[in-house]
Image (cartoon, rainbow, N blue to C red):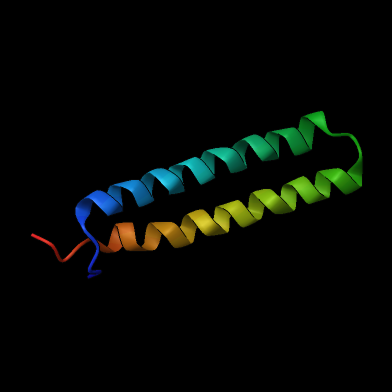
Length: 68
């Protein structure tokens, strides 16, 4: 579907997995470590942005490559 080499798709998937892991850590920090509501909201918003970026990065990975 996409004209991306399989090796580049592998790296994109690693970046996506890393973004999801970082979002999980940020959500934990926002809920249990930070007690200030304003900073907790900022950290949670950053986690949501990372999750959206991870979703967008997964689209080409799930779409596959046209290279043989």
